[in-house]
Image 1 (cartoon, rainbow, N blue to C red):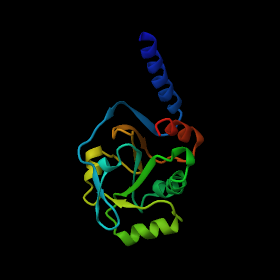
Image 2 (image 1 turned 90 degrees about the vertical axis):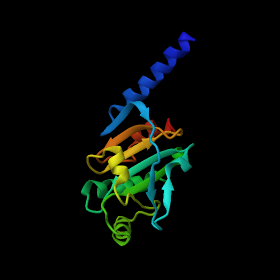
Image 3 (image 1 turned 120 degrees about the horizontal axis):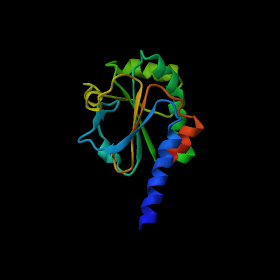
Image 4 (image 1 turned 180 degrees about the vertical axis):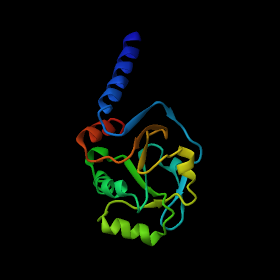
Length: 169
């Protein structure tokens, strides 16, 4: 039994240590659970994150006026089709209070083909998560717990990031 506990501790530390050299990645010491995480799709229908338990979830908060958001969005679009992350659900959530047409034009200009966009219409999620800037990406494990954040932009196609993230898939 002690050997099993030591093995688990070593493995969890190795995940964290390997992730240390991934830019802007912050791993939670204790996974966090939130009540009622909802946002809107393009039809203004409510999306409830609880409906996606059992999946690895990535919430990416962005706005059309955010230059780092523009830089990272194409790599997020490519991440959607990564075969090693077939259980990953990606929700790019606009927090810029922009209308649907402006968000649609943003995706079209960047040639985003694999993702849909969503809205945090009253910025309730941004407040709940205590976001201090965008882009910010929040990662949830299959049990619906936040286990990590990316504060600032990242290349979502970085091999180190994909290898690390695939361990949670």
